[in-house]
Amino acid sequence: MSPSACKGCRLFSVVLLGLVTAGGTRTVQAQGEPSNEKKVCADQALNGQRLAGEEKLLAARAAYTACAADTCPGPVTADCRRWLAELMPTIPSVVFFLDDAHEQSSALVWLDGTLLVEKYDGKPVLLDPGIHEFRFVVDGKSVTRDIVIRKGEKNRRIDVPVPPRSLAQSAPAPTKDPASEAPDPSTPASVYVLAGVAGVALTVGGYLGVTGLSQRSDLRDTCYPGCTTEDVDATRRRLLVADIAGAVAVAALGGALWIYLDTPSEVRVGTSHAGGATLGVLSGSF
Image (cartoon, rainbow, N blue to C red; front, side, top):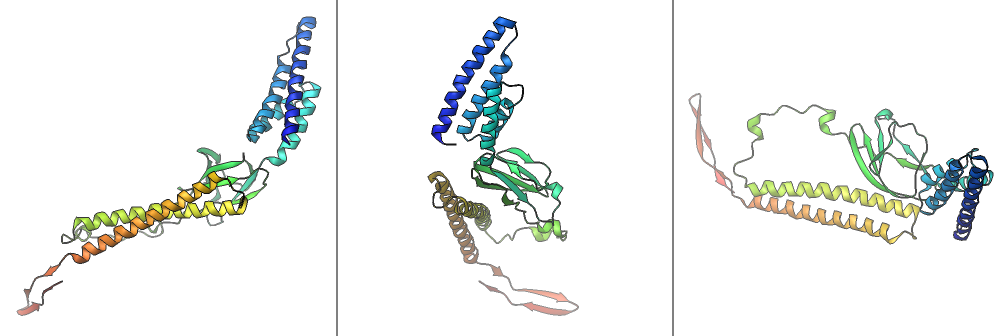
């Protein structure tokens, strides 16, 4: 719907609201019957025009559906049905796909913090256009992705990302001797600290890198080269932070390795008697 046409529709709706209100007033005066229902119909028509202009297409559809009812005045009903027919092709829809290796009933989809799909059935889902945060929960594990939904695209395929199964789930962990799990007393504590920093940085960098590349791929597929500056900058920031986190991980891991190798470890010379035999142990330092 063009801006000039939408402006004309709104002007017509304002005039129509005045006529309906005036007609309702005359009816109240003549017959003593309320005209609230007519006013509600006209209000819904105006709300539908406003919501459609704000890209809140699902709310606009609800407003048009309400004023398109047979109980509304004939002119209002006719306009709302026409506007509804023009609106429906512009509402985007997506279809979620999940591989057969996982229980479909265990897949949940959250949209911008609100539960969208409670039971996976493979049917299209209507959405408002814009950037949305999707959180996919499969087998109790969740993955979050930011996806751009474009106005008018229909039945867009979105593959539900499946988190990898951990080794702890696939096989029971072997029993370890508590004494063997104690850290080597000859290793400085700074080695463990730097190793922990490297692990955290790798995790953060890996997550931001994967999600950033996914978001960049979505932008290339849907809007390149006409993507908005906001979308492009958000993707670049995510990838930049991923690179920084990776550099921090490499630096921390290198520092931990350097400290570990630079710390001398001594092996003492000792003897052990077994069955009357004496075993000599050669010692040295590194």
